Amino acid sequence: MDQGNAPPIILLFLSRGWIARKSGIAADPSGKDKKMKIDKIDHSRKISRIRAIIQVGFTLFCLQAGYRFYHFYLWTQDRSEIFSSRPPSVEAFLPISALLALKRLVLTGLWDRVHPAGLTILLAALVIAWLLRKGFCGWICPVGAVSNLLEKLGKSISIRLPKPIEYPLLGLKYLLLAFFVYIIFLKMDLPSIDAFIHSPYNMVADAKMLEFFLQPSSLTLGVIGFLFLISIAVRNFWCRYLCPYGALLGLLAIFSPLQVRRKASRCIDCRKCDKICPAFLKISNASTLRHPECIGCMECIEVCPQKDCLTLETGSWRKLPIHAVPLAVVGLFALFYLAAVLTGNWDTSIPPEMLKRLYQSGSTFAHP
Ligand code: SF4
Ligand code: SF4
Image (cartoon, rainbow, N blue to C red; front, side, top):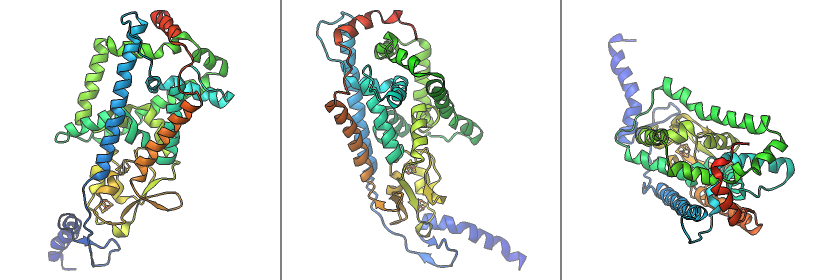
């Protein structure tokens, strides 16, 4: 080989991918020297808009539930004479109580009557994760929605943590999950779970949570402020590194039949999919994506410029339209809600007057 020609040849070889990305003329991944026609795809970003609308809808629903619960709380404290009913959906924010109720349901077949809506929401999230990847995180969870909003605010300053920091941080939420699983599923037997579920401490847990946010300590304010700021600079900080609920759903999602498939022969290596993925997944060199971090947002498929390069498929390799995901996620969630309401498993069996008495002596209840 003529050594004098080597650098230009190497440069030409290295630049093929770059030229493909910039000019839209792709090298054939099979290695044969021919050009691949690049499809023109309409990038109206419909799926991301649908996702934003659904996320805003659920977030507004949670805010109104919080507002109604605040008025119910004021009534229980004799600070308001107007009775406002307690919205059961606030129990979505009591995931530990819901996990205990789930273990009791598995062991006894009995539905929790103290926080039944919390158990319904946990079960809905688990089934959605199993069938539709972490669809609950990607489409429903209001914390995920706020995280998305902050990510958009910080788009111009967004940074990726260096790998030596990122890898240990990635394990943090699984460690938190392991701790809860150890305590609830290994350490606590049925009598102690029963004692916890029917304890006054558990009955007033929603009010305690509200008081925690109504009178935050300086440490709480500091932690919340830190999480807000860091979520602007580091994409999805809470969901990606800290949320044990998301970790549980992600582990279940590994068994989901739904997956993103990449046809290498259609790929032009533009890496638009990698750039848009909120979970930082390397889609451009995967063939099938079964990653526990995938939230099923479908943005990679939408952004891909090549027709039939990235597709949504089920285990039997049957292609699905990407809009089936939001429809199925919201539909399943609504189905769980309706089933719980119709079977009387949505509202707590504790009468408001009893809750009022319990809330008023809430500060005296210790952890059982
Ligand atoms: S799979 Fe990713 S890298 Fe390949 S063409 Fe589609 S967006 Fe580009
Ligand atoms: S892999 Fe695709 S569907 Fe999954 S989180 Fe990333 S962009 Fe969303």
